[in-house]
Amino acid sequence: MDSKTRREVSTSDRPRLARHVRLTFSEARQRHILLHPETVVVLRGSGAAILELCDGRRTVAEIETELRRRYRDVPDDEVRRFLTGLVARRCVEITDG
Image 1: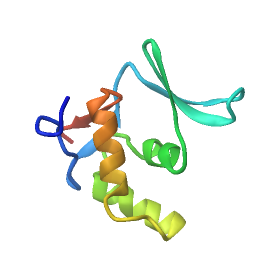
Image 2 (image 1 turned 30 degrees about the vertical axis):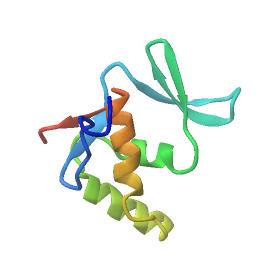
Image 3 (image 1 turned 180 degrees about the horizontal axis):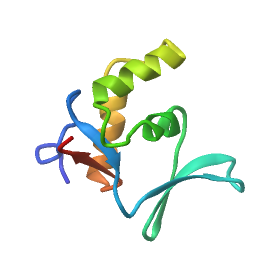
C-alpha cells in the first residue's frame, strides 16, 4: 500500500488488535511479539505498551494521554505513526466505537 492510499490513524480513532492477531511475550526473544498468521512482528520500545491499550474503546488521544501519564515523554505523532503502520499490515483495526 503506498502513502497515497494508506489510511492515516487519527486521534479520534479507536484501535484494537485485529481478530486474527495476538499480543504475547516471547521468552526466547525476551520481547513482546504480535502473532499474525504466517508472520511474527517483534515489538520494540513502547510498542507493547501502546497495543495493550488498544481495546477498541479508547481513542488514540486517550491512549496518548495514558502513555504520557505513565512515561511523561511521548513524542508527538509517535502513537499515530506506529498504529498507522500496523493498520497497513492488517494487525490493527479501527472500530466504530
